[in-house]
Image (cartoon, rainbow, N blue to C red):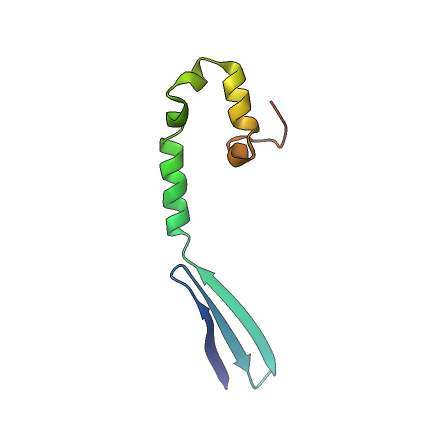
Length: 82
């Protein structure tokens, strides 16, 4: 027989505790709804450049500073500085 208990619950994530008596095995399982994260990433992608009012397209140094900022590192395809 298996027993399940919800250990932790947040609006976007839940952690369950499972105990299987037949195998004497314990499992912790965390499940998270990724939809809010995906939607926020879409919003940020569509708002790209708004925080610089289009100046980032005209000034290569500003673009380099923007891409080298740790907050924007996922816009690059390699972990290098520009």
